[in-house]
Image 1 (cartoon, rainbow, N blue to C red):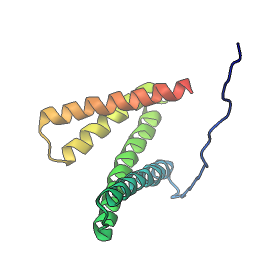
Image 2 (image 1 turned 90 degrees about the vertical axis):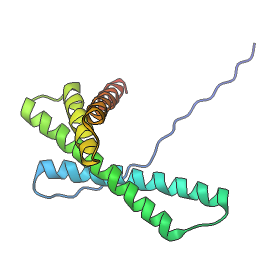
Image 3 (image 1 turned 90 degrees about the horizontal axis):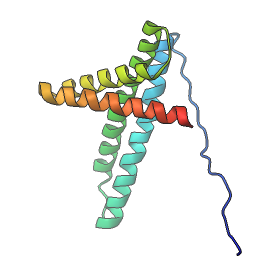
Image 4 (image 1 turned 180 degrees about the horizontal axis):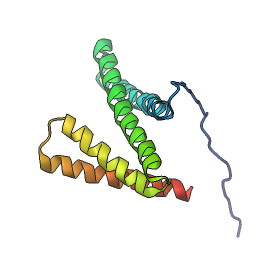
Length: 143
């Protein structure tokens, strides 16, 4: 019986921006801010493009404002997480999934607390942050 198949690979271009602040902790934090902040901007741009096509009109000022806000939020959250992860690695003297768990929980709690949430919501966000960061670390180990 004849069989068909598909073979190929997909890769994305690698863009690496490095800003040397003279401090490894700040280097990692700024790197996380810039890389994930750009993801936030791209996410908002995609949403705004979809909305423009669906509605037929564009509010450029609103779109740019949303892109900037999303970029800053995503970037700040990532910068805090990357900084915490790097700090955990230096404090514990090892690089493993526990750093991701602790950094994710601390980041989730911090971002939630800044958002003026109540204690229960802060704890929930800390648990979520730790779980997501740990899962991402385990997935990273698999690839």
